[in-house]
Length: 95
Length: 487
Image (tube, rainbow over the protein chains, first blue to last red):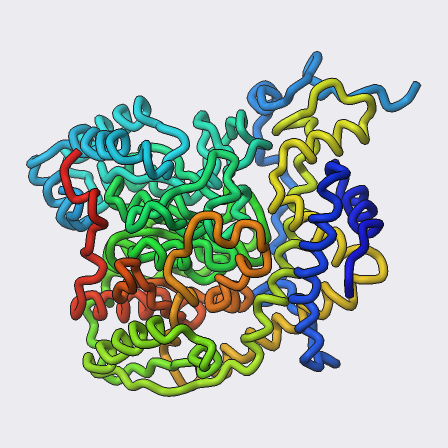
């Protein structure tokens, strides 16, 4: 199935990804080509095959619900662009 | 010095012929001398490395040294290293200092290895040529006009140029094996879950696996032994004892059966690659192994299935880069949506954006069953083919890549053609099997890699076959022209 430029704009929005208007055409063509490759999967009938999410079919391990991390707030916030009083700052959300 | 094996280097250290500080300085000098052109190392750890080397020397003095004590190495810049920048090859993480160290790196540190720096890579490990890196491409030491492969291109080029004896890498669709092949060195990706993913920046979590680059199977085994093992901090880590990878290197391979998938040896295969691989198979046969044709009927669907599964997982994993807690943040965002969109739009490169969009598309309402579920079903068919094949063979052999190293720029603007350069490696990741690449010859002075695939958790057998092959051949000892002189 061919991807249209509206699809590219829609999925870029879904992924919160800013893309330049002049690049939309190139992404449309690249993604359409990749989809053509992907659609080769339709050559095979997969009715009744259980989807495989993990190579070893393992389920996720559970651990006891206890605190194991130490507080590293300062070290962690050193990687943030904008912080104040131990909080991460973002543009105003509610007026 | 630069072509010595780990055992030889370790002996020199323990006999006090050389100190770890001197050895580290020797390789740091090689990096300074040769890497200006290659661009394989993007962050130097010189100061801290010399401190660590002095510690290693004390450990050697006290008689507590292991095989890796005092051995210099490089880590792919996808592994978090506390206090030293971890960029993942992206503008997004250009200033990122991880607050903790990846388990795999920590285990090597515990074993006494000395980290000299971090290596260049495709951005977020997405690429097969190292050309998507924010820090520019890496040159292949065998031919500076060609790519080293990717995504672990920096680690592969650095070991090939003998800038370090060993380096780490990660492999999601071939990112250790394909660059190892292009650079004429030995690379192994173990079974999924064998090496902890904790602290390894996630691309596609059900496929990502760390491994090693080295000059030989023996050196790769020594490094992999130290990295492997259960880690409670990685929920997909496998709680199973690690085999002794060194104990069986010397075993005879007489009577082992090597399977050749007929789907990999079709008329489409380049003739000179076929001849080179067949010569390598003949050598393995001459050591007493049986050769048998096998079939992996669905393997031709591995690239299509991968380009649904990997982008889907990538779009979920990379949603954490929001410009708020860490990573690149755009200037003067006007609101929260603008902050997200511009930080991600400006912080990620083109290939990463393509894969995030591809992932968002296949996971979006109305397409999930047609693409994502379908790909997971195809993935099971591919795995079942391997399981069936391993009932009759010990090892599977094939070319690692359909060509030798290609020219820089050749596939950069054609994603599909780039993706198809991993046609022989991707199925192994989908199935979660261990795989490796060993040098097996040259075409037009460019190295060719032989891919060996093992059954689940049979890394020891895989390394045994590779080591026995390297006893019969010396392709792995070849050093690229221009890098033979001392720095």
